[in-house]
Length: 71
Image (tube, rainbow, N blue to C red; front, side):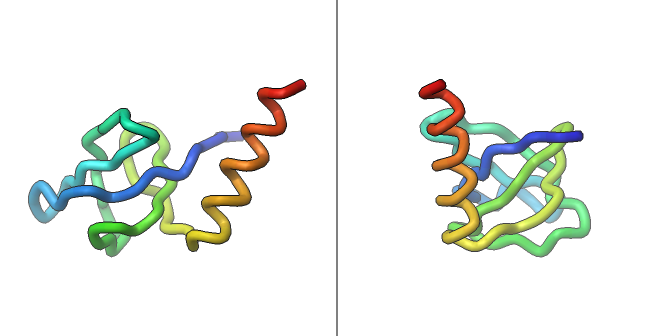
């Protein structure tokens, strides 16, 4: 099982890579077969974007992780 926090695409580096922000931590990720745009919320596994998520889904995932951290 893989657990991923949603990040936000900040920059299209080239046709294969984008820059993704995770609460101030920026990583380079391969976009592969996922069509992404600046501002998209995405999930990354092993350096590759595996899917985009809606803002609502991203907020729900982030809230779940906050709740886990409180326990």
